[in-house]
Length: 218
Image 1: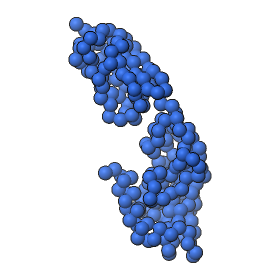
Image 2: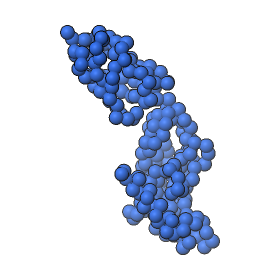
Image 3: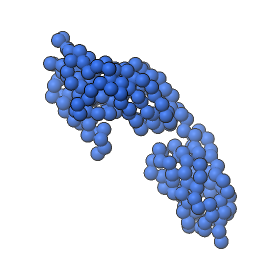
């Protein structure tokens, strides 16, 4: 179970226990913060910079980033469109950086930072501004591979970008491969029977990438 999953269940339990009543009469001061910038936009991830400028009138329970694909995003522990950067750890004024790896290619996302604190009746959420981004298309690429020569049955380690692959060939012949995830930076390709010297080609819905020359050894 990863860190965000654990924090999700902790937050869910707390928000249920305190009633999940946002902005009730008698609410105290909201946290204030800014969504500063979104950088390093890839087909599946972004990096968000944000700053908490005031904690409000009670301690902050959690801070992080929420998003949507259709407009202004809101944080709710019942949804799965948020990433908790930190929780229950004496969160104070200052900047924080959140890496989100849960996006998909060529899609518009609306992103903003959030921070929550307790009220006497529940909790409330402060937000930064919304930033609109479009994830990149996820064009495949091959930056290098090793070894550049081998025999049938050998293995090649191929480095590059491998989002949503639909085809992997070596010298025009389908080649079996192992890829841990779409965001992995390398894959293991097995040299199949019947190949000759040639090139590796990988394809996805957005394009095709071709390697430098491979030499088949006798």
